[in-house]
Length: 112
Image 1 (cartoon, rainbow, N blue to C red):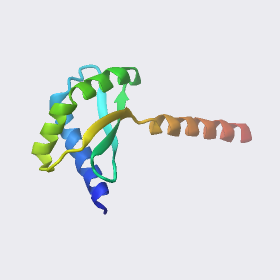
Image 2: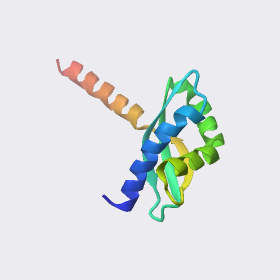
Image 3: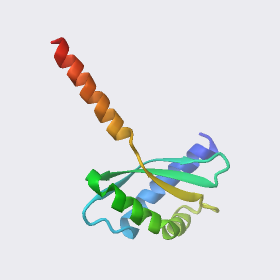
Image 4: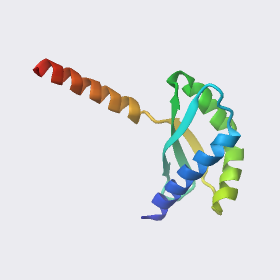
């Protein structure tokens, strides 16, 4: 496993734990789906899924507002010397997979 892959994994698991106590999510659930660090380890793109989906915007606002404190907690929890800048985004892979599954179901039902 490369350094980038190791850091991706550490950040993903560390953030999953610190978000629970740091970001107020009374009406929705945030899940860290993947992390992609740049090759120079200065930037980490954190992709999240939010349920229900209509709270995605609210979740991103809260995550972005909490980035500094989340980075500090992540540093303390994981002992990463320099935490990359955290950039937040919604993971669209689940939506894509759902569309593909629906399309396959339609094709299968038309073949029957």
